Length: 193
Image (cartoon, helix red, strand yellow):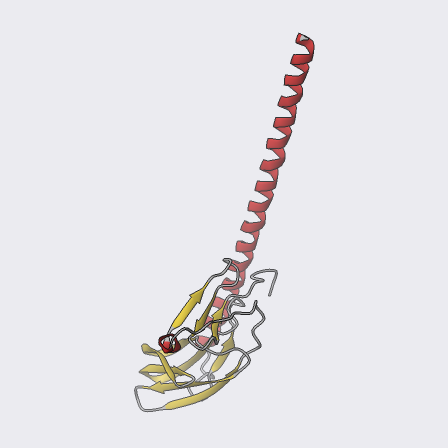
């Protein structure tokens, strides 16, 4: 009986050690996958940052002929960067679809983030310089490719508000009071777009 009990305890210990090893190796594998994905995202961002610097230093991009980078970091399809130089330091007011979004500080080198665009739409961007010059651009965005978002309007108060939605920590998005998606994170964040 003592032999059987010892054998049972030894077997149970071996099984426990195997289970701990398997659980630890799976956790380490998952952690390595996550770290690898982050490394890939950061590498893509470094490459884009270098590209932005090159465009910023290129005198061919002016307010009249700016460089437009749609979804520059390959993460948020309804964003863009507009890059150009001006001969004098100017503030730039930015409107997206007739809504003022921001005013960029005085500079001669401009890297302007564009957000608040609609999916599958010819978005009108207006840049208004403090020296009186202005430029209108159109940026066509792709169709929204995430999960459907529905908004049940309960009052007129929601019409002018923006809502950040994170239903499952994967499909993060911002919608307006009419249910239009203005920003979202692409699901596939890595593996080179």
